[in-house]
Image 1 (cartoon, rainbow, N blue to C red):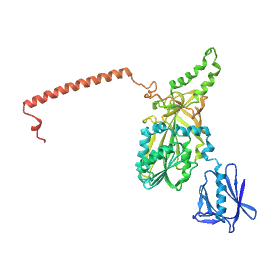
Image 2 (cartoon, rainbow, N blue to C red):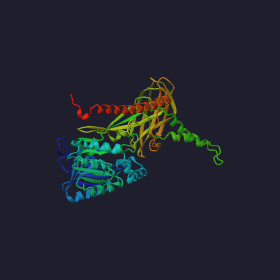
Image 3 (cartoon, rainbow, N blue to C red):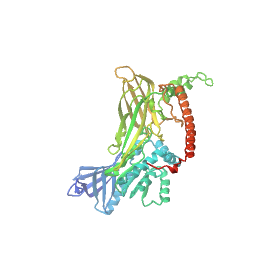
Image 4 (tube, one colour):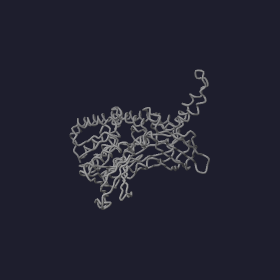
Length: 505
């Protein structure tokens, strides 16, 4: 389907911000819908000489009474029609064609996954779970309030606003206006909170996906909490990066960078626990049925599950490898396939059962840098840590080099398939596994993680009794010293030496 318009003038925005006519004479414009875009094709003398491509991410707006401006990244085109009637006819046809285009989000996401995702974040209980993570919430507030220069009298975009808590922090820091974009039904609750706190003149709630909505101006700062398990799960980081199309040159991103940490770990108990789950399928007479043929498939399935819990940092057998994403520089496409080469120098000997993951993000403000960490050495957050097991562990010795790679491949379920591969150079020792980050096993029990076996260099029993005896001795000495002090005071009082009579020297 195509529509044609005669006597159209088309201009291009030059580097010095002036519109320059493509031709001296009006041309014919043909509007057509393609599979994934809308095209404006220009003809002069019957010959095609220029095409403007309109995608779901193209920005457009009315220009005066008879014109339209289309912007793809930093290239803008101005189309003027010979009459208001022609312009309105074009506008009607164009909107119909553009409405069927898929957004970037829709193209990368299965419908069932999106429905489940936005339903999940539409519950107040889920918002409460995140807000009550005081490390997360307090760190965000600290980062924003510590960098007033990045928010005071600024226009701010909050991507995936949820309850709007970050938008409120931005207003606390003096923001002139905040656009709070939220795609789930939580947008209604966010709007209610804004009204209740009498901030409707400051916070503008925009329901919808950031890939599909429009905002009327460029922004100075973008804020968001887009991190998932292992930093990248849920693929919201791509939406965060997509929002940069509204960021002014030199604008700020909060958070600014993300570091994914990866380290080989040893944990025989966890390894045996996963294997033992599959032993259910070893039964040869479960209600008279032999289940044995499914045991191998069960092992595969259990080992495809990343483990979400926490652990003692001492199970890590090497310094962690750090993979950094600069949110101010990265593009959405950079997160489609994340290929991370790995080299570790082993600090201890033992069995490598897999790779452990956690992340830190930094808010690099103009005044102060603030870090939010999910490291096992820090207070636990709702992100916990993640471990990916190998079915076949590798025996390593202290000082050896362990090499390999971790590749995260995005999928349409708003997650990643994780390929891990490890080997000891010069030997036949190698192991690999592919895990489904969309289907983790939540193992956290609320208990303090135990140190790894074999970390005691002295007798724990002797240490306990020695400590107990020392405490008892100190206690008795304290009592005796107290009695002695009281006797000394009594003697001095009898001799007329009291505190009020002492003269300082």
